[in-house]
Length: 336
Image (tube, rainbow, N blue to C red):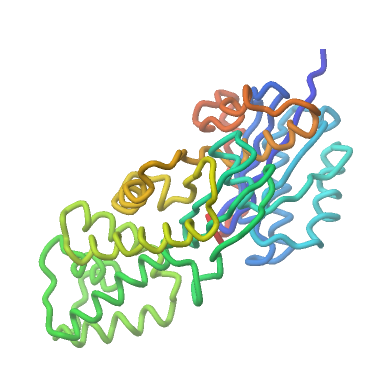
C-alpha cells in the first residue's frame, strides 16, 4: 500500500538538510546540501541547494506520495515561495512547501509543546517566544555587527579583543593559553616580533576577514576547559548576555536551547544551564525532522503530534537507508 510522506527542510546559512518521513515519524530519506539562505547567498544558489537535497532525500520515493511539506528558512523572502513550488513540482510533488522562519523550526526541534521559548546561539544568536508553534516575540538576532550577543561570532570577537588588549600591554603567550591559541589560529608559526607587533598583525588579519573571528569560539571553549581565566571570563559574559536576551521574551513553558554553542557540551552551555536552574530546559535535535513534524501536524488535523515528535526529530545518524541518502550538494555556507 502506498504510504503518505511528509518533507521537512532546514535551510540555513551554512547548509541545507531535507528529511522525508511517513506520517508516523519513520524517516525514509535524508540528505544535505549547500547553504539555503537566500538572503545571505542569493535566491538562485539557495533554490539549487534545496532542490539538490530534496532530490537526494526523496531518492526512489514517488513525489506524488508527499502530502505536506514545510521549509524552515533563515532569511525568509517571498520570492522563494514560487521558486520552491517549481522545484517541488519538478520532483512530482503537487504543492510547494509552507515556509516558516528557521527560529520556529529550531524551537520545534526541542519540544512538542506549542508554547515556550527558544534560545539559539550558533554563528548568530536570537531568542524567541513561541505561541501555538508560531513566533510571537523576537529578541536580538540583529547580526554580527550590531547584535547577536553571546553568539559564536560575539564570543570569537570578545576573545580577539581580550587577546589584542593583553598583547598591547606586553603579555606573552603561555602554552595552552587563550592568547597562544588565538595567535596560533591567525599566525601559525609566524611571530612578527614584539607582542605589540603580534597585536597589530592580528588586527589587520581580523579586519581583512571578520568572519574568521567566529572560529575562535571553539578556542575559547578549549582554553576555558583548561582553566584559562581570560577564556572563562568570555564564556561567562556570553552566558550572561544570552540569558538576558532570553529573559526579554520568556514567560512560561519549555526553554529550548539550539545552535552549536548551546547544543555542544562546553563552558557556555554549562553556564547558561546554571543560570536557568528551575526552568524546564530541553535541547534541540534535528531541525529538518522538526520541520517534517510540523508538516505532519498539518496533514493530520486534530493530532497534536506529541507521540511522534521523538521519532521525527531523532538524530539522522540513526537513519539506516542507503549511504547515498547522505550526499553533500553544492558547497556554500544567520543563526545556525
